[in-house]
Length: 407
Ligand code: FAD
Image (cartoon, rainbow, N blue to C red):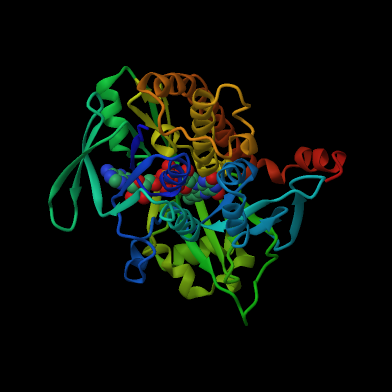
């Protein structure tokens, strides 16, 4: 029987989940990642530094559960549930706001460790090969051939398959090639705000703040947030207009800024950490909407490559994971039209690895009919939620609504 081969570009969170799914469905999988293997202790400093930890919600967990409840358990073993927001007021007082009356939570997870679980999982399948330090140079989407540069040796290698998946993030090279091959409507917008991270270390082996909340210091036009880590530290992210970042030029400016805006955080960080303001990297934030996401039955882009969002709804990776769940559902529908392809249990033993090119194309047409629209909605919600997080959560009307809803 024919066994299809998929070439996946990018071994970040979404690419590594895609590799697990396609391997499970019987495909030969080749995964190419630009960075060195993050699991090798020698490469600790080369991890994806976009955010050290992030929030994984039901949307993302559902995609992992469909892949394997065992893998979901491995992920749940490394998360810290956050049941609500903890608002830090200017006078140092705090106020908890539950996310939900039923006690549901979103979960803080270490990006690197999550990536490692998925990379380990995809390598358990025979027929899966992961190539690190290979960067996509070219993609012939008619021939379904991708050309990579080995970043260690400079060697150029080409590989052909039955489907190319671009999971190569916001600056996706695969997306650029998709735009050569088909008419892609495309919108990219940089917002006027950037971000940087600080670490709030554990003190005497303990968390310095409540570990079961997402902490927010809302200051109308900017905010600081903190998510807990398993080592009892918090990763704190300052989101702020670039003009404000640029106005802090000296240590004195910096100390005044912290005293005026986040006084309660100063003893928790310590002066040394605060001073890293001048050296820690600062990142820009943009969103990308594009449509369609595919070309024939030959290529498809997923994750940030297809719908980068600003992070204020904590749904970028979660949406990327949902992409893979939806893609798998649509491929299963082609392979086993008589079962409910949305039902993970019914699909447990379905193989999609011998689908014809026409069947893959049908799945991808359906995929592009829903994902661009759904992810665009998520992007709009995320833009709106920035205003809620940095300002509305502290308004009287918001607090009244919370009170009326019994949260
Ligand atoms: P990436 O994580 O960017 O991975 C792409 C991979 O492709 C990388 O490993 C890269 O090295 C590789 N690559 C790139 N180019 C090539 C090439 N030419 N050849 C081969 N490989 C290549 N999302 C959430 O769901 N919850 C959150 O709480 C959250 N918080 C966030 C906080 C911040 C500050 C930011 C910036 C983002 C946050 N996100 C969050 C969004 C989340 O980080 C992204 O949506 C997620 O990383 C997307 O995964 P991805 O695999 O599509 O892309």
